[in-house]
Structure formats: C-alpha cells, structure tokens
Length: 425
Image 1 (cartoon, one colour):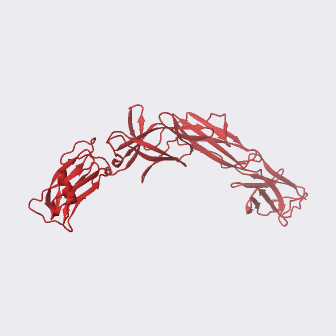
Image 2: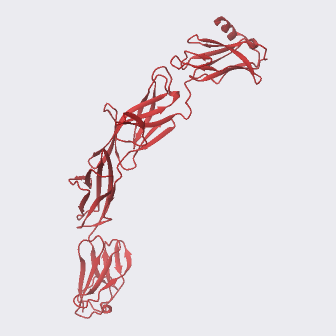
Image 3: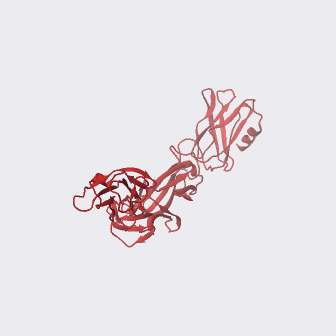
C-alpha cells in the first residue's frame, strides 16, 4: 500500500483536478477529503489517508455528493482521546503531517498538518470558584472573598497533548499585574485551573488585598478601597470580580472651626465586631464606633479613616473634614470700610464684616441693657471668604448717644461666642 501511495505522489495529475482536506485536520475534529475537476466514475475507488509520523493508514471510499467526489467524515484522535463511532485516524498528535491520495485523474495527493483542538461552543471561558469549608466543595463566586479560590479556564484549544497542558492568563489588581499558569485537570479535559488564597487584611490605616499560593508564596499585595476589583484576562476574554468588603458609611461634620471639636461615627455596617480608627494617617487607640475629634490652629483638614470588621470580612471608609480659621468679626464704616471707632456717631451708617464665614451664618445685634431692640441683619456682599451685612445706623434701632451696640455672629460649626460691642456718641 505504501508503494502505491508513493506512485500516486509522483504521478502526473490531470490539469485542473484537485484533492483537498475539508477542513484541515484538527485534534478531535472531523474532516472529509474532496476531489474536484475529475469525472465521476461509477466506482471512484478509495482515498488513502496516511499519518507520516505513525504510519497509520485508512482506505476511505469516495462517493458522489452534489456533483463532487467526497469521503465520509474522518475523525482525528490522539491516543488519550475517548473512542468515537465511525472512521477515525488514531494516534495523531498536533503537528503531524497527514497525506491524502487517490488514483483518479492520473493520481492526486494533498498534505495537511494536524492543528490543535478547536475551542468548544462559547469558549474560551474564564471563571472563579471558591472552596466552601462547610460543603467541602468548589462553587462559582462572583466576587473575591477571603479564603481558597480557584481560577478556571475552559478552552479545548489549550489541550495540545496527551499530558496535562498549561495555559497562561493574567491576574490584575489595581496597577499590579502578574502572569499565572493554569494547569489542565486531566490529560484531555480542556479545563485548566489555578488555585490561590485571597486575604483582605488591615495594615496601619488601610486595607490590603493579599494574593498568595496555597503554599503561602506571595503573588500580589496591594492597598484597596471600596470598589476595588480583580481582573482575569485570557486571550481576548477578561472577567472582573469585585473585592468583597463590608459596606461602611460615616457620619462626620461637614466642617470644623479651629479650636472646635466634633464626632465621626460609623452609621452603616453589618454588625461591626471591631473598629479601628486613624486620624491624619496615624492610628488612634479607640475601639468605639464613634471617634471624638478636635481641630487645632494651623490645620486645614482632618482625615478620619475607620476600618470595620464583621466576622472575617473587613470594610473601610474615610471622611475628609475641612478646618476653617477662627471667625474675625468687625464693625466698619459703611462709607470708608475702616474699623469703627468709639464713641461712634449714633446716626452714622455701619456694616458688619465677617471673615471666614461658613454655611448660612447669622448676625444679630441690639442695645446692651433693657429694651435691646434685637434685630437680625441680612447679608449683602461676599468676596474671597469675607461677607458684609446691609448698612444700618444705630439710630434706626432706637439707640441714642451713650448706648452700647452689641453684635453677635452664629453658625453651625463655631463653638465659641463671637461678638463685638461699640459705645455710641
């Protein structure tokens, strides 16, 4: 038979006649051999198919279909592939050279190289699984949880040999990306797995995601915030998994005045069992769910971070609180803008000037003593953090020479009295 095949390979074919593999052979795939450009005799005879490496040979009859000569489908199998019904070229490997030849039209032949398995339907697929210590079984997870995890790739084309093969994918958290090698879980399964351990742990004033091998070899250690994700990329497929954190919300002052205090409290969390506080990047020895804070002179803001644990899970939240300078309150001449002097003419217009006001402040004024004629002033101008009231005269308030005018400033964050007095003349 091999001598016949050699004769066919060196024979001179009829012009325009061709023999071809349809499609090219691939592991665990099927192909047909098609002959075109030849008359269709009553008995076209067989096509000889030979694996040049192994010597495996098949004689496959040609038959007429839609005016063409074709063989039945022939499957390409490796020694480790499960048996299949029908014709099969067995013992193949990726890269083998296969020859098809026929005596028709003076002798025709074609060669093809065995390709890897084709991806299955919907492949490649990338997934993550977690090991459940209660059921002692693996199951899908849609987020990165602390514990034993497994990256799974389903891609038949990665199964290239009759040994457990490996495929490479990329794991990324934040700016940290690392390649990992997933190993086939059988000799011909096309399913690849890589086990790792994920741990979210507190360090100083932040949370870190630590990815290690089951043997405790570090793969990645990165700081994380709410919304952090881990991504897995295999070829053109990318899957992302949010890091599982305890949701945490803080109630904090919208601002603080220098010299004043307030409180930051955990208001949303899943039954916190532990709270760790940090103030301006430094740990605070305080374990309660609320933290007293105070603003000192010279500070521009306070940064408060709470690390909250519920069971084995951690969460984090941060509040940034602006710190405002102390209030500067003055009575100024409406005409010149200069500070008022004593005794101030009771019929001359004044304005209240406030520097470093915040929110919706109020200014009240009146006469010191009985019958104070208290009045709330409206604001008229604002520029560069300084506000001015509408002009007024003490006389409008029913005041006379010798009276004392008082002015008081109020806002939600100022914890000390802010006032001025002015003797009238």
